Image 1 (cartoon, rainbow, N blue to C red):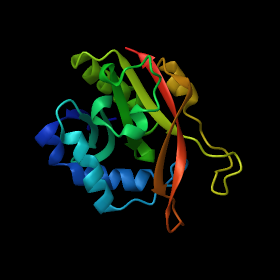
Image 2: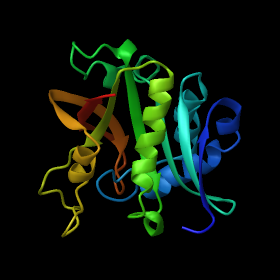
Image 3: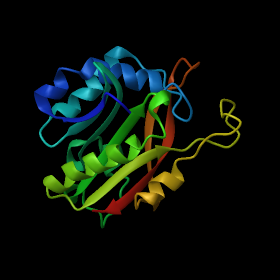
Image 4: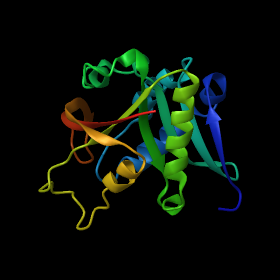
Amino acid sequence: MADVRVERLRGADLEAVLAQVAQLRIEVFRDWPYLYDGSEDYEAEYLKAYTRPGAVCVAVWQGGQMVGASTGAPMVQHADDFATAIPDDWPAKETFYCAESVLLPAYRGRGLGHVFFEEREAQARELGLRRSVFASVVRPETHPMRPDHPRPLDPFWRGRGYAPLDGCVARFSWTDVGDDTETEKPLQMWGRML
């Protein structure tokens, strides 16, 4: 991974590169299982949340190009759709939300997924938060765009100490590739103690 560097960005440092994070999200999330037909306008508005105090973006650079990004924020700053999906005994004020991670295919399998979690969990600990959660989109086995041999990330997440939170499913809407309107998707919440 010569010339690859990782940087934890916050506030104004992140604002300066939000357009690059947006482009990565649009590109990577077009693939399975998200199938997200994103727009620059939506991304610009959505990503503003990560410029608030406490939020973080872990960026991966190859030379001057951003090739990966992973975001996170205290749950109290994130969408209510996710905060209301966590168990009652996981107070939002004690929980960090590991939001999205996007990485170009050529950089996968090199340990950067671990770096994304380590850096976001470090941010959570620095804020004094005791729990970490994230959400994974759930698609039916019979989905027409499902690849023949999808690579599930469950073993990776379990290896990081995360487990699905029983009965905790968030619902979020976006437009799928090839569709004209947004549809609601279920997202399974996963969590661990820090």
